[in-house]
Length: 282
Length: 274
Image (cartoon, rainbow over all chains, first blue to last red; front, side, top):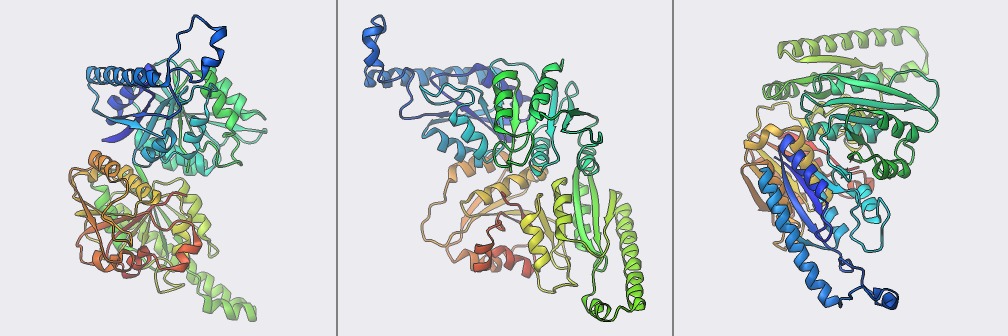
């Protein structure tokens, strides 16, 4: 059984990431480890807001001790509801509690697991509201196994789309994907390559790639997008798909050379498209 | 279906690797691609460079072509005997290890003969060519000794570092059907503490993939004696992450992987996080 680590923020549990974890676990024979992570300065309410209290007199203020107690209760509740959900779904799982510091805990978990699933809005901070957060950026570029970032709403995956540019990172991501996922009959696959110029409609390393995928999947569609702005084009292509996609891509930050994987592109997709993204880097 | 590369030169046919392929194909369908290279005889090149006598050069070329054809034939023959889906890629005399790197980018596994790979260049393994391939390959490399018979036990060489866990994971992904074999995790570190780093997480990981795992801590200087210790284990495969790109550290001291390759008693699986 493959080991999937689900990153859980007990103070702000994301139901869709739970649903995706259960969905992958059941369809791909995986065991789920729900890892509850913590940050010392991260509470359910921002601490230090008392300063603003005169302006918001209706707000009830908590002391740090009170907050800690409340948060502990919340963590417990979250763990219980997670347990109930996975039991109901019949997923094999166990729980890691109180993992802190969050990013360190996540990286260590990633070295010893096959896949990480986390929600797009995971941040473990009261102040970092951007998507993707600092936490997520670091996780995506440093993790020791592939990461799936899940969107705000759950839906079954009908099509796996490989963002391919012929780079070592893209080939690596495809290989990792093939070890972890075997698509069901209702799911199909597509390889998308963005060519900046008018070049040929062949993928780079086409023959070698074909050999690699031979016998792994029955049929794979191919699309060559012609545009100077690969990222934009890919986003448009994904939006125009009628089927529910999961995007597979290579390195997040390491390879500056690779056309696809500028930070902005992965970030835009995570922020705007509402589809799960599988990111692996070498 | 996994894509397996088998790299060899035309002169030395790796029979051991084929016993492994036979064994692997009994577990799952595989696609084998042979990368067959022409061995260059340096002693012939010297007179050619000094006095450009076309006869010597032509003779050499002819000889090489014949050797290559023979090797391709032999490879295809062996594959069809094992009923393997296969293809062959050959390059001329001027091949570089980079060719293997590009090929390995699009392959699940690269197999080399532990003894015979580029033996015409340097007898002693791991020779320069093998070292280069090991360091730069973008797929895990499996070194098979010529007298390979079977695999009955898996040994993970664990040193608490990221590379060694990466190798374990790659191994697990490539050979999911090994879950019934007994696994021994050997912790190698030259210190006396009894603690194995991240033991709980490692146990959780191996426990979800294998039925039976044992931990062993070698208290003696692991790097020095690991190869000696491993030589006594019959029919086992050793999984190791070392052979990272840090040229300095590998140059400073002989890694235990190198000792294992030099002794070529067991198959060795090497994967590293680049």
